[in-house]
Image 1 (spheres, rainbow, N blue to C red):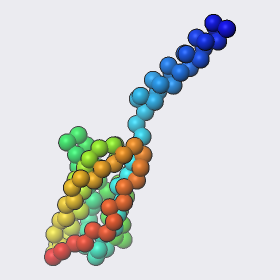
Image 2 (cartoon, rainbow, N blue to C red):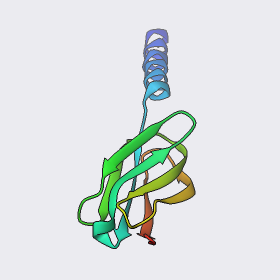
Image 3 (tube, rainbow, N blue to C red):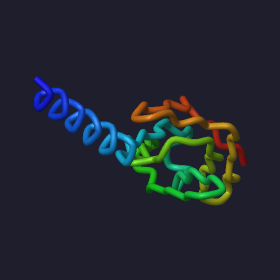
Amino acid sequence: MQKRKWGMLGVTAITAGLLAFSNIDGSVKGSVTPPEGALRAWVISAKDTFRTDITTGTFEIPNVRSGTYRLIIEAKPPYKNVAKDSITVIDGSPVDVGVITLNQ
């Protein structure tokens, strides 16, 4: 009985240790109108920066760590860049920022 107790305790300790170091990333996705007006989407925090090209007006930035980010849509002239603050990514959840409208 004592041997089994330590066995379960060991498995529990190993599992807890692995979960403590696992990194479950999320994503940030959305679309841009007009679709031909944007080049790239960026999410920026104090610790991380991620980007992706925008094709056919849609984007998804994968593997974004949990945290709060600023989203920047890099536009093609004559359109202007757009920024959106307080994009919060939570463990493994995708965040849909909706449709971003570019202005000239």
